[in-house]
Image 1 (cartoon, rainbow, N blue to C red):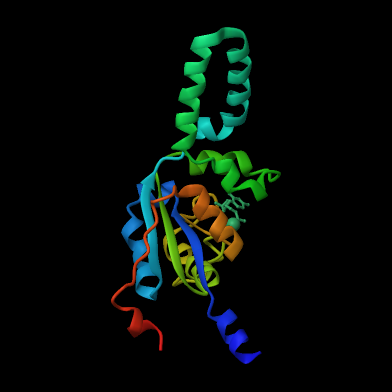
Image 2 (image 1 turned 90 degrees about the vertical axis):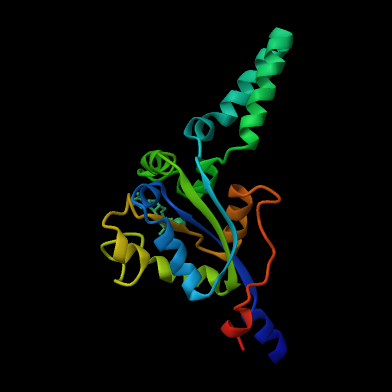
Length: 198
Ligand code: UDP
Ligand code: MG
């Protein structure tokens, strides 16, 4: 029982952290990355990325339309269909990312915000990383976030709160799979590992 409990307490989790477009525009990328680096978590994925809004909103409808066109319009439609698939492969659906918030009144503005410029996508790994990253990030409303947290130190408004962090280990895995393609994550052992954990 006890070894099992210890093993489960020490489970290594993954979280998806993202510097939102306002964080990138305001030059806060380095500052935000360094908070997680200094804490001692392991970076396993990192990229600058523009999430396309057109695609996020239109992917489903567009594909249906293309299937329809292919049925009626042979060769040209086939080419168009191929192009859409190519775009879909290299873009992320921001609506899928925030699917739990689809019914909220602020959802359209949230999608505008998150697709308004490049974001920095990160995967971080460690024991307890999901909950700890949420603490480092601070409350959703930056005015309620404690000083010392990223939002508490660097932001003033919920709609411009500079950073995203997964809210559960399950969502951590789901969001990393959504924003990163196969081959974009790295398995590695930081030299500091033995100095972080007994
Ligand atoms: N958001 C907003 N207005 C609200 C609540 C949330 O604009 O009233 C935005 C905000 O950018 C937030 C994101 O939607 O970070 C996702 O909301 P969630 O409740 O998941 O907050 P988080 O997990 O980011 O703290
Ligand atoms: Mg959330």
